[in-house]
Image 1: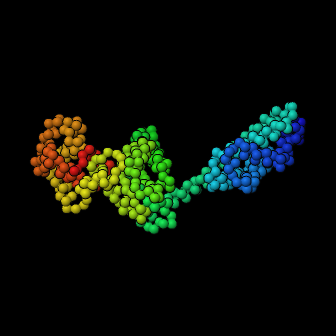
Image 2: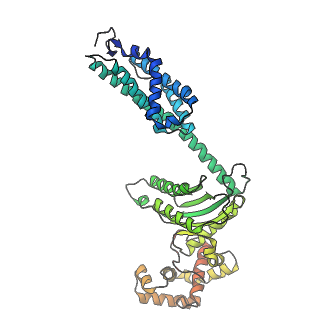
Image 3: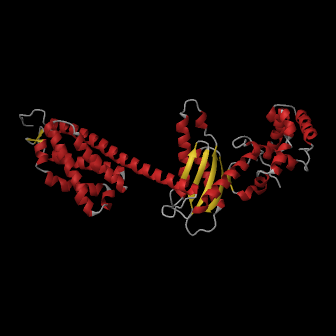
Length: 420
């Protein structure tokens, strides 16, 4: 390595590296671009005009910035990095992969260093080592600028997409005209209750993170099977989801959608109970109201997790509609309000599929005590919950009481028994 009057500037082949590179930009630029095209397949998909224009321009600017940083022995400046960030933002806007952009800079830097090394002579190893250190610093700064610019643009796009989805969801639920912005003619309307993931109760886990993770995995399952974006308003315990249906499909494959809901529950790691109805875009408000009511009925009657339609609970749904009949059914249990132990035993007995031994075990009492309390229920209400004739009436009375009080949406229900 020959001496130079700027001792901190690496000298290769008797020439300062910045001088060597500065005079070779016209030669280096096509070599760098050709190597990027060869080693990063995504760049071969770009229009030739973009490669010759924007890509060539930012490559030339980055090379010149590196030359200046070598000459002045300084890191890249803010304005230089802003150029890199702006170019990366344009790639994000085009949907070009971030990993391809980063790979292109790495490939370009390797080509530049190979060019410098080819000019080295015997004794230039210390200068090459110093240059390699500066090359790595340059690449680190470039990578940070690329990532920052790309992700900033991506966050902007995601925010706009989120706002667009939220606006469309609100319009659909409000029954406003959406012909100009609707992404589907028909939707599968789901009102959903999500159980707790195990992580939500773990003392060492951030509950908010566990909830967001559960919701993200739940919704991602639907995104995978829907051609258009899914619209959702979800919190930790549930919410509403609108799934766009394929145009031209007149019949909904409920078996398939039950399987999809099952996969979504598995992905979320939590039990999922959903009420669904397919509806035209203009009919979404009514469908959303009905599925919400059906979900209440599913809770009041303690149905197992899964996807249900109103057809699955027609009798239960009708029994719990507001009116004189529901009020009178609920009033049937009024005498038990003064005897909480009797009411609790009755509800547990129905939830345990009218099995007295399981009821006794659940309440930690003797089976004979269960028998005594059920006899007292019969004496106070005039309806025997043990006999086949009285069971449907008592079942309906408990559900009517819950419907009237608005309780039971996430509580224990009357498991495994249907009113027929």
